[in-house]
Length: 114
Length: 119
Image (cartoon, rainbow over all chains, first blue to last red; front, side, top):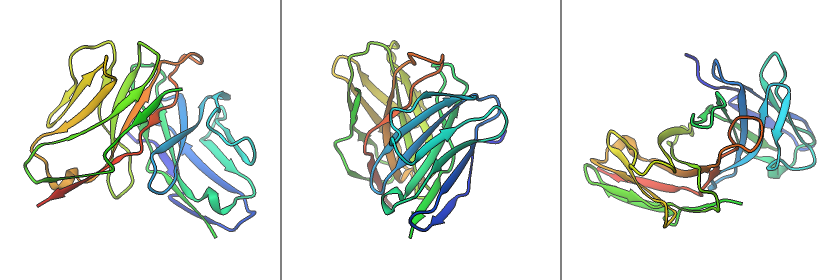
């Protein structure tokens, strides 16, 4: 069984460009979570999505950041007009949705802003 | 809001010895879930062990066990017979049951403990 797939593994952008990070959940999982990990820090929750719905975006910056999980295709985390402070590892996790089941993480996307 | 505190930025243990990593959390909820995740240098996030708050019995997974003290809001991880492959960052995480969507809310992580294994 394929795990949570994230791509790209590494993404380099210049300040002002857009970054798109993709996440395909595990088979059978309909719930997706995005987290950000700054250097030397733990992961910080950003957003929780189900198919075509944002359930909780309380951890997402109000500007420049958006997320979607369309009916078909992967979940996308989009960062517009990137700045140096956006440099981080972005992790996606998925779960089948039942509260007793843990989240399974992808390998992350390391975003570097030049 | 829930908070998770890991007071040990770094711990070191001799190979084959036992080490305990500390975690405390703050919550007003009575039902929740606790997890330990391992992040090796490859930066994957690997689930080590989990505990449901309603269960009094401490979870165990092979060499890994927890000491869950609900009243004290403490959730420590014990690694027995430490191996070189255990070297990693260890993160304690909290999750409450979802209030919406039928799923579960996002995890709240501690800042992590860097575990060093001395050969």
